[in-house]
Length: 232
Image (cartoon, rainbow, N blue to C red; front, side, top):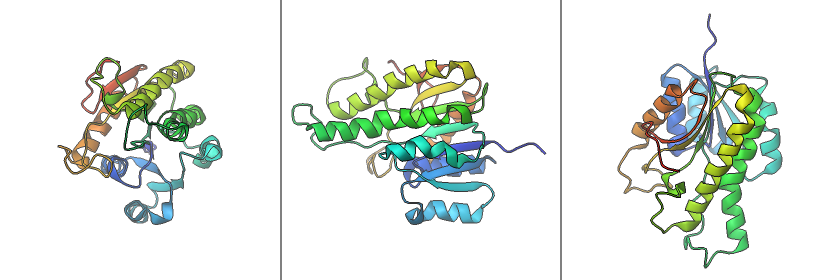
């Protein structure tokens, strides 16, 4: 009997992360999902209780360096076919460098850019060589070419993530992985708000389709939920 494929979804207790977990399950995959407080992730717990052999939940706080560095030890040697590092915050409401404090910048950059790369480095040996995909949830707002101004702190954090992810790709090239900076679009979530045009379920379907299509591509790409290239 063939081994079921396995996806890691980081930041899976709500929003698009939770919807991606459901989409992978619907496609017959096993899922390792993370949450900051697993005991309070009611929907995720319900999925795990309904499919105990296919869904496991691990605690992960993206702002805890020790937890990031030791996370991979909790995988118990499980090989990942896809890893989606879905973590991010919008940052201070003012969104301007002119008003930003060092503390605000530090917190935003660590969560949106530094922590995802730090976690990815611990996962390299756990992503399946040759066909594995490691994706970071990025944003078109991290594009330098497509920047019309505004939301400059958030834009800077996602641009930093894109830059660091390119360096990470070169670090991992010996394992023939695919690394994606993935723009999920404007989605109706707690972060995206109710005015967003697309439901989280529809967008999760697109995200998973792209992740599977990119298996074996052996490249680093900045793409959206439909697989379209985004200008760096």
